[in-house]
Picture 1 (cartoon, one colour):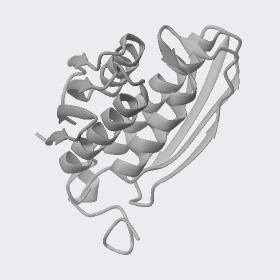
Picture 2 (tube, helix red, strand yellow):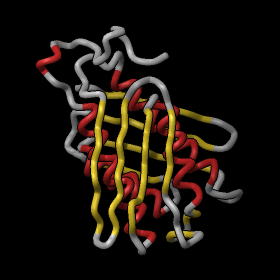
Picture 3 (spheres, helix red, strand yellow):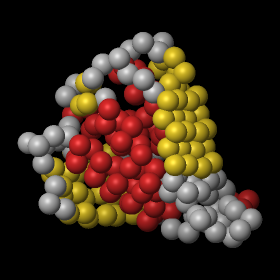
Picture 4 (cartoon, helix red, strand yellow):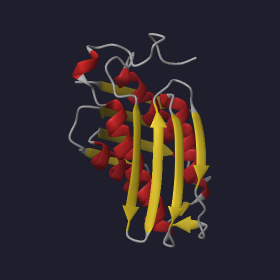
Amino acid sequence: MRIGTIDRKTSETAISVEVNLDGTGAYDVSTGIGFLDHMVEQFSRHSLIDVKLHVDGDLHVDQHHTTEDSAIALGQAIANALGDKAGIGRYGSVYSPMDETLARVALDISGRPWLVWNCRFTQERLGEMDTELFEHWFQSIAQAVGITLHIEVLYGTNNHHMIEGVFKGFARAMRQAVENDPRKGGAVPSTKGQLGG
């Protein structure tokens, strides 16, 4: 099994993460931000990546540090579990419908982090979470894992459906990308023989 763990402590947050890329989508998530918990749980369930994520953050200041640092730590744990990325699918792309909303996510675990974000929300908050923080969460996880990540909400009117469609699409695309393909014989999926740079 491909398992990655991270314990990360700063003056702003204390985080522990464990992921199992070959899991069943089991999760135990507690960030202190209810809506973020819900989205990370969706990610776990639909990617089939087991996620244990516990955060003690400075929420008395705001949600920025907890949101950013949870994505960094989760991404670092995924990167650790991926190792040299030998045998993985590398790419994933998904159209993700959620009622009236359609989101599209395409990604490459290339080692060259980049985020293209084309999502426009009409509410400033969902639950207690600032909607502007979602872009930052995805930027942080893309950087930590080393993902070229394109996310777009093609259409939709309900802000909750929009971001949930995005997280589910990201989850399904990650499942494709981290899946081992036995036909690759353990080779790194690049003609360079390595990913990144």
